[in-house]
Image (cartoon, rainbow, N blue to C red):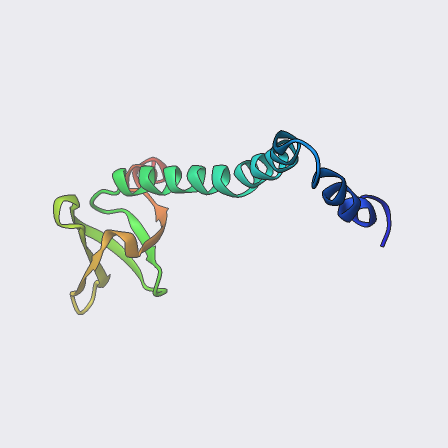
Length: 116
């Protein structure tokens, strides 16, 4: 072992007879690192996902977590339900939960701007 890792047991051994605050100060950077590397990015990702769900509307092209491509026919946020048109020729429709939508591939607003 080298460097800081080799000296870590010595730090704990020295703090055994010291103040409890010195042990507390040792763990503060670990807690901060955990927050900034794990919790904060996870919260940002969840915020983006909620914004995507709130913006979901009719005629959006989506991909479900099960790998099904479809077009949104209706959104019922109150009951957590989305109805997708999967096959235009046969008129196949699926009712899924909103959380099953993995990605919005194309919004209905983008489609209208591409055709002009």
